[in-house]
Length: 300
Image (tube, rainbow, N blue to C red; front, side, top):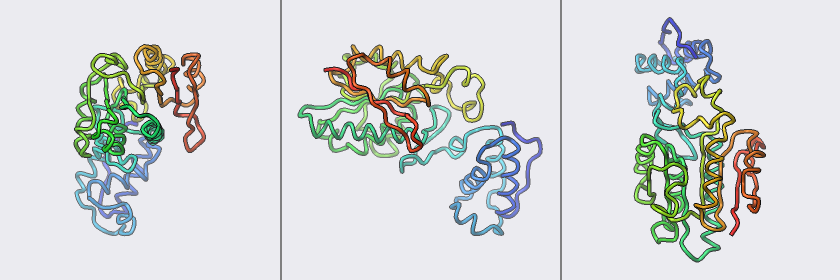
């Protein structure tokens, strides 16, 4: 989206939303009305329901709203402008250090919770879970909050790594915000490189690796122009890092380990062929019926 050349005007709530919606529509936002309402609510501290019920109210902080609209018109994601994303019933800090958590990643988090629950009920020994490419730390926060007792008692060890020091710093902030900083071991690592050395061989691996094709990232349309390229670019077909992870897995994970991977639409068939021939592979569809999470159970 290109920013508008002429700034809009603000007066009443209703007029401000209409004007911002028009400008954001012209700039190419696919959700212009929602963006306008959310941004006005953010700068005024009002709920969207209040704004819609009081269209004649004067706009509070018009300068801040104008600045937010200009940023959005320039293509910056709403989550970066607000500084957070409401995700999985949590408020996750967001900024250009890491990818913004997507709704489909909630499915990945839920699938991992179910996997760890099953293993805690079935296995007697301690379990090691590892989130690769943690980014903002959103999934790690979910796991740490859900399994705090198991972590505290030594039944579960939870690690989260990323190749980006900036992303790890953001993850640490999010873990601290939710009171679970002591439950997760954070480390700088390239995929599964530290397995068997700094970390135990994991029984559960969860990863939302970059899976966008390089050409799409280079085009930098919409939010892709503002989110970190290292968190998006998966190579020519979007699968470079997934290939590397699966190549490493055979020698790095515990026998019988489970890998839970978020994928792009249409990537499941290829990833299935990359799994070891003796592995058990299944998929978890999202609410739209699209295959977005693949579960790979490695041989014992």
